[in-house]
Image: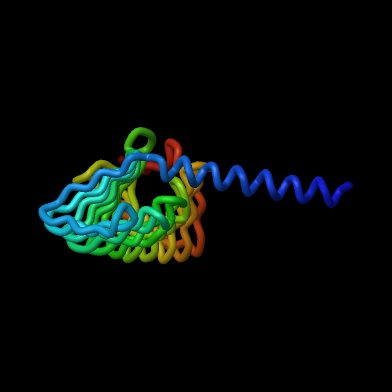
Length: 197
């Protein structure tokens, strides 16, 4: 009997995943650019002031390629990604619209402006799911632009806005006029430490 229940549970989980993917693919996608090429309804390439919009996701760049079947989106040249209230901008992007995963090379960013605004830059941002980011060689602050009273530099910075947790590895918390080096730091993202701002 337990074998049948396990089989039923697996089948239900697969059905829910398939339904979620089908719903995610049902969002209308719009493409605008100076030049657009495509293969049927499956893949499109856009060049010259290109823009692809799908639900809460907007991506701009000089060159964008989007494969609807696999949810794969690539961008090069002045790429900007906006997902909800989060914004990233840099030279190169690979992103999967089905599971919100991917990599952005050398981006600047503005995060969660409706809650605790944050901004900064990184060598690379890894998208780990909806509102979950891993920043490599990152600089992060919740101070307003032009007001750098404090910032955190870390070799790796994990931000999870679902659980409102931030974790920094090999970090330097730089507070004016003094700074502190930390091997590891954890902090809340909701009304997080905006020390001195």
